[in-house]
Length: 498
Image (cartoon, one colour):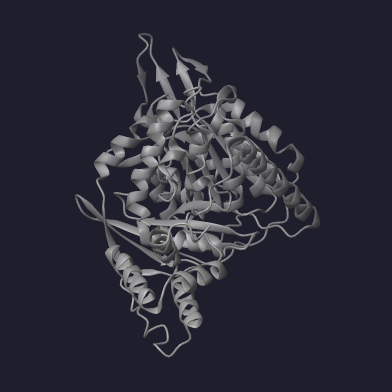
């Protein structure tokens, strides 16, 4: 599926601010960094509830989730960036995806950007249903990732080289962490259930992907001595003195004390060369905290094309639903973007454990340090037919979610350009148009972007009025800032635009 990139770069400039720019997008760029307020400690505090063992979406958690999404958007989606984003979505072909790529410094990268909330969605959409005091479906539609045309990944692209095609069955190694309770092995994290669920989900494509299970206490290095396209780990991840590690086994002694001895920790710096030797294309960690930079960074540095991990606490049910769908899509040759969207909407469709709405649709973090997102390219006719089926299942989930919760709202600035041109010509004199242009230029400048824009730039006083207005619309549209003009026209002449 055709994919366009919207690349946002951001970094902390001091304790209270960040710099943000748009490196590339279908609608243009912002080369001069914008200074935005950024209190990382406050954002981490606002996101702390995601680490609690409360996954279901009730009134209180939805209010907190929307507030978190709006706070995150103040950093990455200030008005000029939002203008380019909405303009990019407006330009997107109906069968295309907009990949929002976040290129962030170490202080920002771990924040839960998957919950970005669109600033242009009215506050009223956040409200609860007063009859039930339950979570209002309309509020969910304001999250950026509720738009089925959008995927979100982290990391700047380091390579544009496509991965070689695959023909035969690829190997997936599923590594599961178990517990030792008084010397007796227990599967408290249900890792074997997760393996069985993956085998069942991929049964229809078993000739394309073969799965093997290995307890995490086994010889992982030996298992990765042979080619392994996909590593799937299920268990738990943590960080010790800045070094991320996955848990091989949790030990519970006779007094009920829980420990993870150093020998039962596999640090990602140790795992990274194993994955490189195994020519692993995708590493997925179905484990709490496994998406954190301290764990992921060594794997990316070793050259793994794509890494997925979890933001915070994750239920076994959410992990099953997400990973089953992810692999169903990737195995037949769909892109990581399509797989992420399909998995996210299946989670939105089915909800959390017991079918209740959950916050977990945004818990998985994807790192893609490449512009090539088809991790298992296949050319066989059977695979092509399977890709069609996989896309249809995603479309069905998207339609189901839209029917239940509503569509992602259109941008407030969306308006037909012919309608806009005729409205300005009819409602504004030439002198008023000059003031309108100056006001638009100033509004954009107030947001940190300076444009050389006046009536002379657009053609001068001898230019026919309709042509002058058309030039204004096209000038702003090419740069992604047409929304500023729409907003000013609506403010100056209420009711003349739909």
